[in-house]
Image (tube, rainbow, N blue to C red; front, side, top):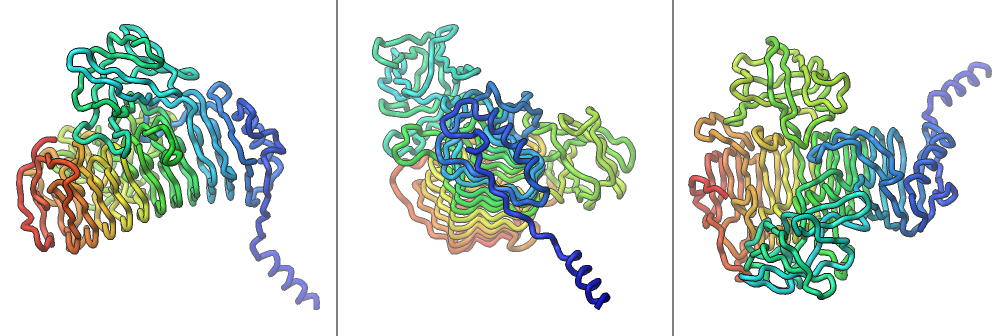
Length: 603
């Protein structure tokens, strides 16, 4: 009997301890709808909840449904280096979630409204967390919306300022907007059709000159005598903007197993969501979108809707709505480091090159890497492994731009910093599923995929993306966004009138367009690598113009069973009048198209 008791006791001790569900109603901690300076109350509540909960608890934070206002004046201050954003420091955070495990933040349908210049929500160094059922917006967006009232070749443009915009005539008679702790002078813009909300045909990025601005005497109506643009007819809506992007709406950093459900970002001064160095992210019914058909605004975010830099595991975006943003719906890539010094045959000093992508961890010991020649984007040598990595210009990784990296295998002899080489981290690359999303009425592009792992883009609607709908890029010279696509399926998507405007990488509705300065000297191929590596099939193209597919430096491209419907909604104007245009492509299968080769023309 004694032995049986010992056995049963041992068995019970060996079983995993069931975690407890612990629900915390934030109203009981002083976080209530309608109270100002919510950041302070929420910060204090989170500290108390952490003390009251156990390490293995499944913690649920419940908001009472309503409006919550977060102000920069009492926000949490942190030094966060956020990929593809301005690296000014510190960042002010409204909802700061650091070092949590098994946490669910449930907004219960609440509106989180932010004031000033701040990062609405940050989830940092956390595991198995869920964000759900809330929206993010700003009381005073930094983008200013106006409506063209009159347009004269001699008198300039007369415009009416939207009622929510705080504005004044600043120095030199320029249009200036302001909010809590910030001012802005918009010098660029995007024009929208008033009724359809499509970006106005053949306008692209507007230059806006408001010098000499004066009032017309009518409410909120101004005349800009030096703003001349005959394309902007009365009734056109213009989103006037700067090029600043200090923070995203949601920042994910160094997390694993993150799920975001039924969350909407209505405005952010950077990306809608930026994730870096995260493993496994799932978005379902995530939106960077307007507040519905009656929303008086025409714009959402200052840049991409969602952006994933140096992530791994699996990224999924399903049933999302991405509209009105000033850049792409989704961009997934790694970051090339540039080789700056060859210390010895096993050691290199490498650097983050782009001004908006540095200061965060790039890799770990044990990661697999490849080397690329910047001019030709050819791979050099075999895959190598990081033995050790440490910051070279800082004591800690936070804020570092350079690293000393030692490799297990010898570095190829031809890697000479003077000739230009980059390093890609192959370990930090994700599988991707982008499915059943709607992308519409946005600037620049729809979806960018730059991962060598299995990527599926299916059953999405790309409706008036204005530029290219899908782009495969790769660049070790400017943006330094890696890398090559090796296994991609684009199927059962519908494309409606892409390419109404010209931006970077807009050679066709689907553009495979790596940046290769010395293409004629290239020995290999950048994208693909085997027959059927990139398959584009069973899609529907509803288009007014000719170019459907452009590809260069690709091995293993299939374009088949796609339906093409021509419409007359716009006048064709694209320089590329080939449905399929291939440049340095091999192992391609494009039945029904000749796959003509032609030198690229500059955009």
